[in-house]
Length: 135
Length: 170
Image 1 (cartoon, rainbow over the protein chains, first blue to last red):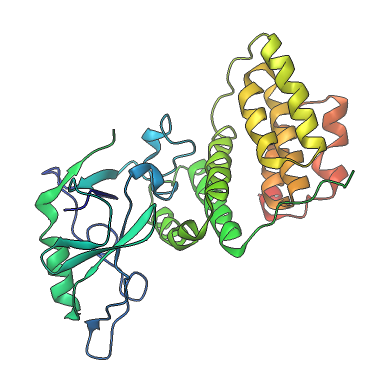
Image 2 (image 1 turned 90 degrees about the vertical axis):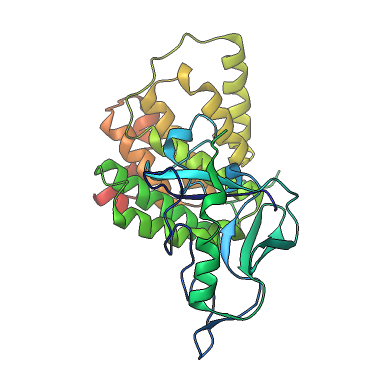
């Protein structure tokens, strides 16, 4: 599985919150849907990065300012890491692929056309594989 | 020698800077962990992805510098030979319109300067770089610190005619 980072809200069990702006996507923003409410496969999806330092500075928790200049994210957010493989196009998890669009950004996309609910379920199913990593 | 030029600012860069300024204003009000702040962060994701690494570094630096407007000033340190050299390089960089280098050098030697002067200089750099709105935040801070030296007077928001910006009206 590719090694990626995403900044998300954390639940009391130490794992990411499942939801549109955490472990999930915002329809119309992160993904596009067809008339049947299926996710269009166009390399869009849940945004991730090969290193949390590359993520939008307004997302990086401000407690990490000593590492990333200007970090301005919510104190309620946490940097999570998934996987340990190379940051390259390919399978990510069941029903999901990693689609890099630059050296510092990729989307976790549906591997094939799927109902939105299926895509969301596939993303949520990765929850156990994310772990906090702010090193 | 050609006159210093403003920074080229893309729509994505301007959107990102506006988001950082809005988050700064929310931080001033103690609302930087509010749902409103999260909405602003959501709106900066796409602009961030479109920025070059130089633009990202500029935004990171601006965000860091804006913290100086709300945090207690650092204790001023005695001037060193290295600081003197940096003052000279800073002056040259500003004269040549090297805005990113100017902001970085100012960050490196800010602990040797009066906090009001630091904000004046940041305001001057951002003004000359072409962002009046950001400049006005730093000029306003300099005024609040009540610096009364000649440079301050010359660079005051009133004398520069930028008191009509929203940030200055706050």
